[in-house]
Length: 247
Image 1 (tube, helix red, strand yellow):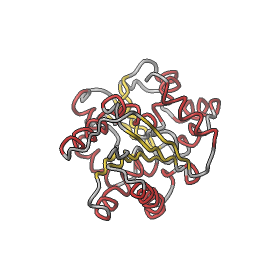
Image 2 (cartoon, one colour):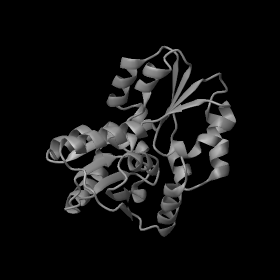
Image 3 (cartoon, helix red, strand yellow):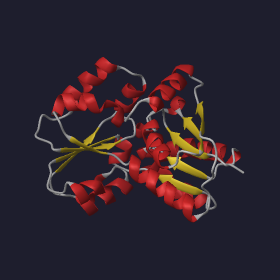
Image 4 (cartoon, helix red, strand yellow):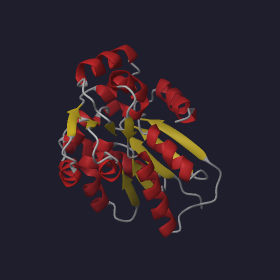
């Protein structure tokens, strides 16, 4: 039986993670859930995010998913431990800001970490940051940026970045929200050519390894179903457009 893989995010930003997963696991079935009615997660309390995520996880379980991917840094940071404890019989993989990659590949470089308030202030991220701090990093909380990206407000995004990002000689940027890879070009307009790091590939590799270990990789025809909690047809259209774009 070909069971699907569930992918969740507060909106369509998680498509950046899904694209990495498909590269490693092309012959699988996927269900993507965009919780746009509750977007953004990054400005909600931990309890509020847990209620949203728990509802989606139950939806995926009802769809007989063999694994669930949190393609949302905030959902991972605030809820994944509790969700794993509640649902022990299903593989759950979460994304988090790729700050360890700075330690591994760019430890001497001046680094900017961009993330939602929920992620920046979470215990999970603070522990990660303290463990791998290169002593040359600035943390930048970006409230409302994911919403602007979700709503395709290009001029407002440009103004936001111009006002928010310090004009400094950063050499690396950690994109700590799955929406942010969608605006790499706009960030480069502020900072110039720069190295970007995000957690998409790491999540894809972790998922692949866990499915292999549990003999859950099926040889099926690639298929993806899209759900949006606000039933917004425009989001569905943009999701499939983004999925087709080269990264």
